[in-house]
Length: 226
Image (cartoon, rainbow, N blue to C red; front, top):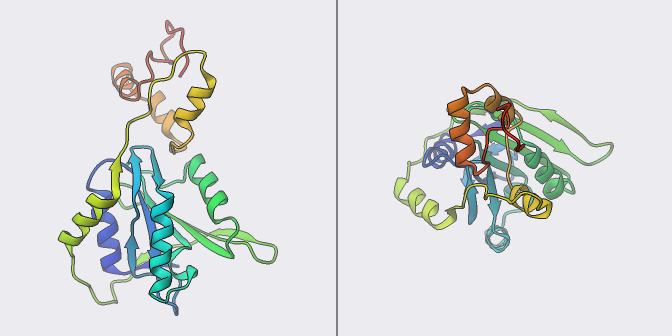
């Protein structure tokens, strides 16, 4: 079971609810309980409603700081945490690719996602022996002491680390390379397209306009495909 201290959970939810974008970070643990998240730590990152991209130098500095504190990688670099601005915590295709690329060489790692209404997803992956993956339950361990809700420090960390990027930029017809670049770092939920398809035409067109996608592809009179 993946467990959170009340303070770590409060901080994660506080960051999640600061805006309508994804927020990512790492869960840190003690050496004696590697699935008990005592703190949620962020690094400098660019975020949007459908993506989060960590700054490489910031990640390296975070790792160096943790090692200087005497912590081992399994205490600060094995539990990848991020939130989705929608209700669904299901990992996106980009989430899956990132987890495999970044954590695929680790002996074990956890991908944890929390949605807007506290729905959660946690998967433990282990790469020793034959390897394997399994979904694990999540719990906030209220039997532990509550630490202080340090809103001032959390706000300072948020301001220093969270940079809101542009939405998906508009790409020109015929520029496949540009389109691939625009969407490479975006983590659309699995049900994103289904949700758009189920919308009323006016609402759907509003969302597509916000994404810079142009005409409604579900409109029979439209000649463009999103």
